[in-house]
Image 1 (cartoon, one colour):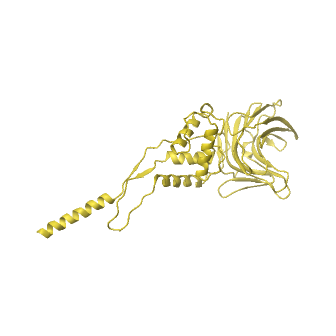
Image 2 (cartoon, rainbow, N blue to C red):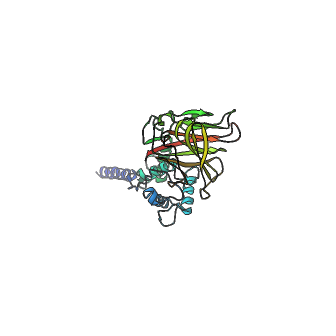
Image 3 (spheres, one colour):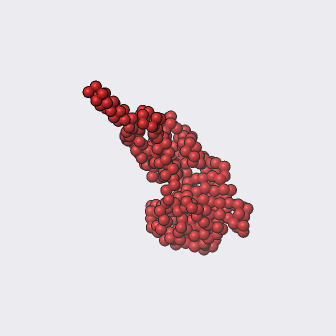
Length: 331
């Protein structure tokens, strides 16, 4: 009888220990930061639908930002964004572009598993381990960045793409990488290159933005493209923006702006640029929603046309433009 009771008590203790040693997982409520548009220094809550405050709150929660939420993207926020990008192995450009927005969204919008403490397992003879919230967040980010984008077939507005199968080269060499990036490259006989999206030829009023990087050369956005003899373009180089208009084969510079406050990094550099087409008025900007330069055309017959991208450098075969994301919204 004594042996039977002892055996029962021993079995009960083993069952109890096994139950305690089994880890359980709960999910923390997440504060989702879903930034739907890119922006940089000089932006504010007014121009970004409160996205700057959301960004600052997120960066504070992650330990990169210690100031008060102001709703203004100034030098302190810029430094915090760069620290966040560096910590997550992104290029520290200080612009909240597509990759940074995807990373923020995946960190904040996916509930993070919080494991309870575990005890040593009697049966295995070692301590069991569980993933930390930080490890789960990083895994979510890697998944987000590596997801293949959808096929580029959109021909109407709004247009958003991260691959460029529908784009065609008109100058130099144009190709796409395995992850969808559009490469616009000079070749042995050219000092630049150009790519056009033919499905956009009939577009009228729109805001065309692109996430781009360049080695050596400039970055040029092309708008109102009808053919090689009729288009408008904005060229971004150093702290200078130049707008050119080409009508019936004749090119002229129609607006120029010095933008000394734009944050620059050595080549290769990556930036977010925008060309706005509204009736006869064209505006261009870098790293923000406010036009840095504007021009109003007097030729009312040239108010339609599509989009493109170009780069130029004085030495053949020595410049490459990378295009990572393009979005065009009707205005």
